[in-house]
Length: 109
Image 1 (cartoon, one colour):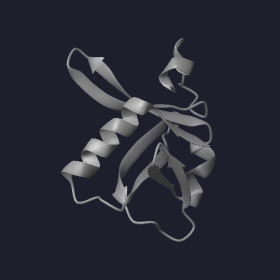
Image 2 (cartoon, helix red, strand yellow):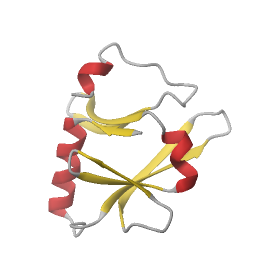
Image 3 (cartoon, one colour):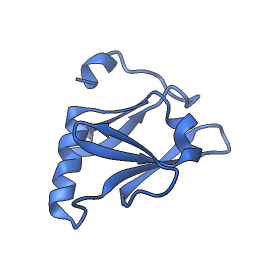
């Protein structure tokens, strides 16, 4: 359903430790853009009725029922975008702009 890399899980745990999010899940929300692409939002949240809860690497990922289809098969990673700048990325086969990186299997480890 939804996967989180080790690097992303480590960063999420650091964020939990630095905030008041202990006991909350990480909500991943998506929105289809006019060009067909997908934009992502995420933040710590309480579980809501109808949420799918996916536990990955000891993190509860919360996905609203309306977002399930767009997130099916998605992986989240935390990578260096530019020298010294790290960010979360989403590897989503449902996004028409998605091109899988050549090391996708290694990222999921």
